Image (cartoon, rainbow, N blue to C red; front, side, top):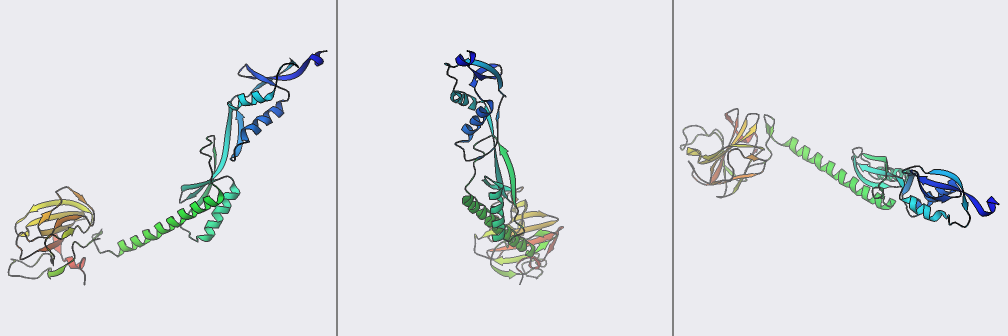
Length: 303
């Protein structure tokens, strides 16, 4: 008589609170997993309830509605899903995500074959997340295109860096200071060490003729230590480059820097002029090492 009127069911409770009834515990849990993963294309590594349900065998009136469907919907809110995916990095920077290790390895191997560069680091990392958006992955062909583009950009950057290093290594240097820029283009009108009727001593620098107002660029990184009128030098800018190296720019018509300014090689610091003891627009360039002037043509304007 009991089995005619009643049916055996499992009462399901979470934290002691009844949430419904199921006939088969295992079948119910499988149904729950299927419902959660049905509409996702992501790789689901694990599904777990935030709190394990408690099951208690009960006899329930057969007339009572005990469908699993509503219970499955209710428990979806109590489930934590862990997704698995694979990150592909170029030079330790993540570029793409794919679903499987097979896809990741295929992609990396193909790109390594196409780009035979030992300087490019391609790596794969297995990742887990409970954030569904974070687990968004790309189609394999899209991922390949993006990684390939990044690899090509990395190769180009490496080549450009090598070229820049070669350029820097070829630059003249003094006391370890690279002289990266010539201050102006022009005709040399007076060389270092020559005597002249307009000077009391031999020439301490190099005179380069140029049009009035021509930009004067600093030859290397440094700090401005002087920017003012200075007797026969006229408007004079001095820049300290470190290691005892200093450059002077004289007879300028305008000075664009002030004492204490930090300048980079190639910055415009003044304009060509004819101030002070000068017979026409030109730049008087001096290079000093530990206070002693040296021939600028040993380092710049070499012939």
